[in-house]
View (cartoon, rainbow, N blue to C red):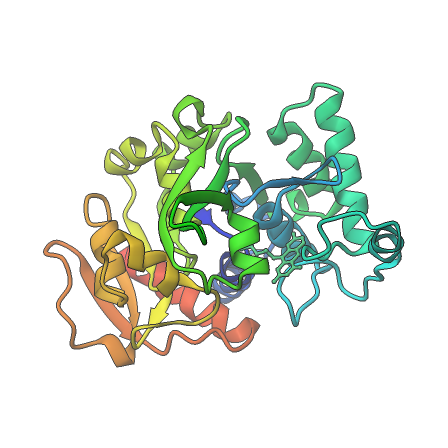
Length: 335
Ligand code: FO1
């Protein structure tokens, strides 16, 4: 199977890790070798299209938080408690920069994590595209061995900015990370803008991965600042509308609350109801199947979308595999 996933950071990465387990379980139940496939069966390929709107340049280094959460989680190197950054990292460099008075200090970069940003920035500076750089990093983390191809949604630098009200009553835009991390999304967002989006083109392989997929999955990532940014790259939404594969989404909201992150603060400026039904409405021009939590079973969903309910809390890897398996089952029924 060719499975294409549109992903943000932490939630998307944990979902993809569960998806890989679900695929291994299915292949083993079917008596087929898990990773490489047997002669009688081609291996599964999971292409992950990652959001790059969260990207930021700090200390002259290009940081791609969602791509890195995917790399570290799938590669077994993530800080499991945070869901981002490296496990058992130290913060010597940030400490020294702080002692020198270098700002910002609100964005915590561990020493091992910084190696990724140094390498990425070096390679970008040498003329490699973000896709090429991401492929190198993916090899370091063993993604190809797992049948995973990680693509940034675009090689064009894009950055999500949040328009907020200033103390003087004038609006001003701040970088998404400043709003998300420094302000904890507690400052009212008036709207989101994405610098560079108008000129952005899908990275090589992105549209092909959508058009050629057997199933496209939207994991429980933020519908506005993760999935919404991917959908905003010219050509991506049209490719989804024209996809031959069923497109299955997993609600990031349970009982009207985000499982993690600040999806509620992101939906409010759009005037979208903070609910599984509200999020489904954002995708109703291409969505075929929608997984919601048992708590949201009785809501009314867009016509033409097949809804299934289950326990959607991804407590651990097995839970993520169970949810990913339900997405594959629903795709099978809709194919
Ligand atoms: N999230 C935080 O809450 N605080 C941080 O200091 C922080 C630093 C950071 C550094 C690298 C990285 O890849 C991610 C980092 N994150 C941090 C997570 C990130 O801000 C967000 O969770 C995502 O961008 C939203 O998907």
